[in-house]
Image (cartoon, rainbow, N blue to C red; front, side, top):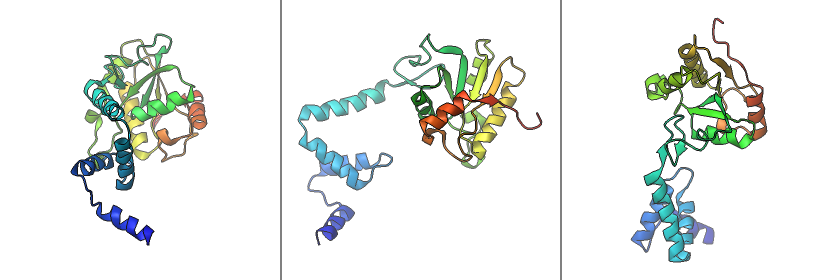
Length: 216
C-alpha cells in the first residue's frame, strides 16, 4: 500500500509549495535526472543551512556568467587560453582532435597524453544537418598551417559519422607538413570515446597509427 502511495505521489507530484515545484522542475530539466531524483535533491537543499544553498547557487551562476571558450582549442576555460593550452610543459607540436569536451576529460584521465587538443564541436552528420561549416574545422587548418604542429591525432569515435569526419579532415590537411594519425582500434566500431575505459583509451592513444584514407 505504501509503495502504491509513493507511485501516486510521484506520478502526480502535488506540491504544497510552488517554490519547491519550480525547483524540482529546474533540476529535472538536467540530463539524467528524473522527477524523483530532482525532488530528493531539492529537499536535501531545503534541509541545509541557507548559506550552503546560496553558495551552491552562486557557484552555478558564476560558472555560467564567466565561463569562456579557449580561443585556440575551443575547450572550456576561465581565461582566453585554457590551462592545457597555456601549459608550457605540454608538447605544443602535438594536437589531438576530438569531438567534444568530454573526450578531452576522458583522454586526460588516462594520463597517457601530454600534447594539446582541438575540439571540433561534433562530427559531420548530414542527417542531423551538421556539415563542416558547423564544426571548428577552419581553426584546425589554421593551426596546422602555422608551422608549429608536427602531428595531428584524430581521436574521434569510430562511428560512420566519425569516419566521415576523419576522412574530410584528412583531405583538408593533405599537403601540409603535418603527420596525420588515428588512435589504435582498441575501441570497438560504433563506440563513443568518452565511454571507453581509461586503460583501453590510453593504449589507443599511445599505439596510434598513421592515417591512410581511401585510395592511399
